Length: 282
Ligand code: SAM
Image (cartoon, rainbow, N blue to C red; front, side):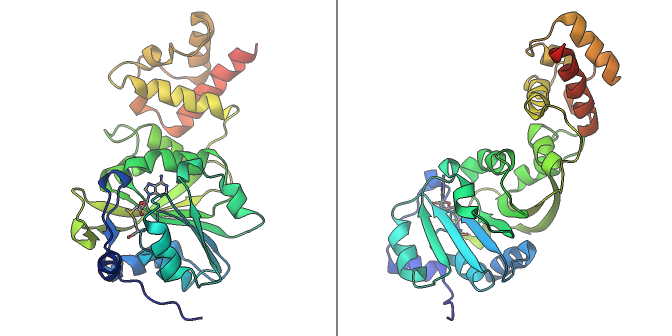
C-alpha cells in the first residue's frame, strides 16, 4: 500500500489544530530534515520503529515507507483522531495514546529483534525520556532523536568541560553517539526559541566500562555533580559509608578526593564506585 505524505501545515489547517506549548509541540515542516532523520536512523524493512510524539504524523509517514512496523506513542488526545484518520489505514501502523514516560516498552517490543527508536522529542521531557529508555534496559539498537542543541552538547561532552555531567555519563555508559544534523528554528511551526540537533545513540553490546553495582555507579555520579563547585569528597558524603572506609575506597581507586567530579573520566567513576561497593559489602 502506498503511504501518503503528510504535510504539516495542510493538516494543521484542515483539522484546525491548536498547538500546546506545554506539550512541547513544534512540528516539522522541512522535508530535508525528515529525510535526514529517517536516513540517519537507517530505518529498513526489518525494523520495528517506536516513535514518541508523532504530532500530526509528518515524520511517522516517512518512517512507515521504510520500516516493517511503526508504533507511535502520543499523549495529546486532540491528535489521536487526526493520526487515525491520516495514517490509521496502514496495517503496519499502531498508535498508543499514552504518556511515553509511563509506557512499558517491553510490551511494545515483544519478540522483535531489530528495534529502533526515532523521535522529534517534546523538549520539556527530553532528559527523563532518555533516562527511562536507557536505564530500563530495553532492546533498542539505536535511538535517533531530535533534541535541543544544548542537550546534545551535554550528551557529547568530555571531562573538564562545563557541559560534562550526569547526562553525558549516562548516555556514554550505554551508547556511542553521533550527530546526524543541526536543525534551525525555521524548520518547525511554531518556531521554537532554541536551535535543535538530531543525534543518534547506538547501544553498545556491553556498557563502556565494567561496573559491579550500576545503582551505586549512578549514585556516585549524581552525588559528584550535585555540588559542581565542591570537591568529590564533599559530594560523596551523602553515600552511607564510614569516613575511614570511604578514604580507603578513594585510595584503592587512586583518586584524589580533592578533585572535582567534572575532572573524572567514566573509567574513573567506575573505579571509584567499584571500590566503594567493595567496602559497602564488607
Ligand atoms: N513528530 C512531530 C513532528 O516532528 O512534527 C511532532 C513533534 S513535537 C516536538 C512533540 C510531540 O510529542 C507532540 O506531538 C506532543 O503532543 C507529544 N508529546 C508531548 N509530551 C508527550 C509525552 N509525555 N508522551 C508522548 N508524547 C508526548
